[in-house]
Every structure is written in structure tokens, then in C-alpha cells.
Image (cartoon, rainbow over all chains, first blue to last red; front, side, top):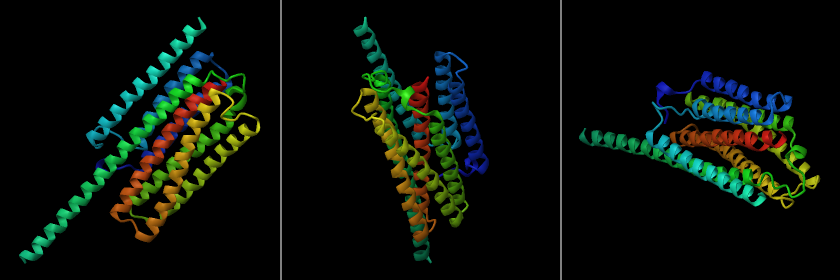
Length: 103
Length: 204
């Protein structure tokens, strides 16, 4: 159960909600307006997404280094490493293969 | 006296055992969420690899509507907020408010699923079915898996409301509500990845 000192309040959830709205509005606004070239827009989308995931983990799932059990953080880190290897590896190999087939 | 003392200490010990039992369940649920995250990550990898293989069928630019996706995102974010309010009400032991916020959450959830189903049926009516191309197969698998998880989450909320009404806010019910909240917020995170990987790059 939650440690009382780190117990969430209405402010926690509303802060997270407002940050999430802003971090959603930025990529949608950029894509809809077509302000930047595609590659620049794509990097903004990815950066906004990563920040928004961290916002959700902090304000909605209440992860922090003080009250979250260490084993939960370890499991999260392990899952993140697995995801990085499997997603990164799949995309790297498949697009490399794709390029060689074309070339 | 000593019998009363020993029974009191037994109660304390069993209370302690129950607390650590809930902690074990919460950790177990967290492990489930991490393995679910890996399932979604692999569906994302499949989608990214397949996204260019439209097999002369319709592509994302033709099929996706950003205002529609924005509406879905807004409903999901609001539902995360309202579930948060339900959690806060449960911590303050306000049974009526918990039920109220869960009803709002489920109403937002129904709105999301309705929007997703109308998108899917519109695509299928336009001939963009899963068997048309690798892109569409991967799209329906990824977004459909999220929608299915989400629907089970709504079923979970219904069961939760039933338990709160019949059993009250007892420690086991509170622990289940906490775990359901983790699941609900986790699905919101998966949706961020869906609009950032599928919809926004799809229309770019």
C-alpha cells in the first residue's frame, strides 16, 4: 500500500492531467499544421511521447525512488531493457534487410 | 489474560500476514503489467516493420483521422483522471464518491470504445480489412489488442463497483481497486505509444 508521505492528492492527478494534455497537444498540433519537415516533426512526436510516459508513471502510477518498492523499479527497468533490445533489434534487422533487398 | 494477549498477538500476526499478502499480490500484478508491456512492445515492433507494406491497398494517410484520434486520446486522459479521483475517494473511505467516479470513468471508457469501433467499422466498410495488407493486419492486431484490454478493464470496473456496494471498502477490495487502477493507467500509457507510433507518423 501507499506510503502516506507520498500519498497522491487531487493536485497530483490534475498536474499530471494538464501536463499530459500539453504533451498531447504539441505533437498533434505540429502534425496538423505541418509547420516543420517530416523528420523534425517525427523527433518531436517521439520526445513528447517519452516525456508523457514519464509524466504518467510519476503522476498517475506514482512511481518514485523513495516509496516505490525496489523490486517494482527493478522489474520496470528489466522490462525496459527487454523492450529496447527486442523492439530496437527487430527494427534494425528488418530495415537493414529491407534495404539490402531493394539494393 | 494471557489467552487474550496471545489471541491479540495472533490477530496482529494475521493482520501483518494479510498486509504482506496484499503487497505480494500488488507486486505480482506489477510483474503481469511488465510482461503485458513486452507483448505490446512486440506488437509495436511488428507494426513498425509492417507499416510500409500496404500491398497497393489504402495507407494510413487515407484511413486515419487525427481529430478522431485526438477525441479518443482526450476521453482516455479524462478517464485516467477520474479513476485517480476514485482512488483518492477510496483512500478517504468515501464509498459514494468512489462509485460516482467509477461511473464517470466507465462512461468515458464506453465513449472511447464506441469511437474505436466506429473507426474500425468505417475502415472495414471502406474495404480496409485486416487481410488486405501487412500494414492493416498489424494495425488491427495492435490497436485491437489495446481495445480488448480496455474492454476487460471496463468489465473490471463493473465488478469492482459490485464488490464495493456489497462488501464495502474492506482491505481486500481496496487492494483490488488499487491494482485495477494500475491496469487502467498502464493502458493509457500504451495509448500514448499508439498515437505516437501509429496515427501521427501514419498521416505525416
